[in-house]
Picture 1 (cartoon, rainbow, N blue to C red):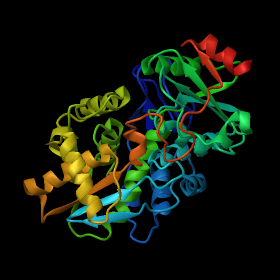
Picture 2: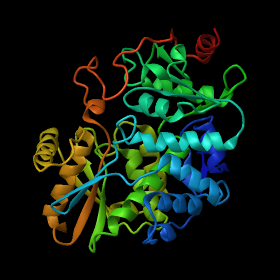
Picture 3: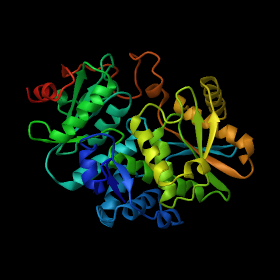
Length: 393
């Protein structure tokens, strides 16, 4: 499998991950074929071994089997814990160092960049939410990688541990930007295209092809481990508003994952959330496989009250405390069982984050890890010259 931009230019995973974003517009999308079935149907393989097999199957031109093993050991070391109840399998992806499922993606990206051995690399990303924590933990102690986290106007720098900061001997700098998230995205794209002070820059946000690939690999390895213990069909539930997660399910199905269906929640925020890259990837899949989305997806309307009720009931049964997006996915899964799947299938529902990441009613509240409101190293206007001055001063 390779990656293509909106112009149709196609490059390998390693190069696409190093850039992160195309220079012009949009994001990189998967292109070409692969076969995940050998990884899925390996009954004796461990979670990490299944992930390594998926990596090798998808990217034989970029990653040899030995490198696949090393990457998987770094990014997918153990099968996530799971809680089973009432034909639901809740898989806890939020047990890593940032208490968020982004840890798998960030670790895979960092490992892939380190394997390129192309010299120092500067990772740049919007640090809002759990992003900053996941990227800072993944790049901690990685020689040759440094990280710049940008924060939109009014947003605090939450979740990065003090020892990760450059001023404390780490490799992370925090920069406040006097603009909204769309302007930050444009700034990240320009930095990745032009570099900063002669140094190569990687756009390291969730749209990065390595991070999307990690979503695919995590899905395959988790699905394979859970499916061994059940005889019925296994559906996948997607967290509410997770467009990239939905896109990963679609491509996994296209590449051979035996998915009978995907359960989606519909709320006032729609199905795909606010991340434009998720919608773009879903639209590209739809253009290539017309009608497939309609046949694969089960849509369930879920409001906030229903999500909170499902979360509370799961906790009362001894399950993990879900973030609101995961709770919406759980509620959608429960409604799908009642609508006809009960007795015929099970549904895998991911827990994507500690609730304190995605429901900070008070942004000054303590995050699950790291600092609650760290001091910025610099505050700038949203242009590349200002960012370069701040980083080279």
